[in-house]
Length: 125
Ligand SMILES: [Zn+2]
Image (cartoon, rainbow, N blue to C red; front, side, top):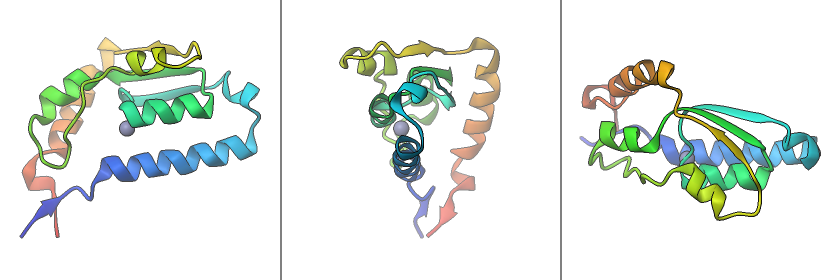
């Protein structure tokens, strides 16, 4: 029997994309530029691009993609890329402010994620 986390990262990206589409229809870009997106883990390349196109002006993340990569390792459901979101944003034409990692929350994020990615906590499919 195969175990999975139901490809949470892709689902998360699709949810983020839908959320951004809704935001973009509900709020003017000038308003979104003044918004801050808070997230436990650093945005991946896909999420960073979504944030860029949504015109969100600031991101605060708790723990970095490097830390996630170290935590998850070679997990087949989460082939983490270690690109940092600052590098992704620097490839664009907007000056998105990035704050993180936030040292005071890293231990808690690591502990919760370690439990989540433990093989015993995968769903059976
Ligand atoms: Zn992502």
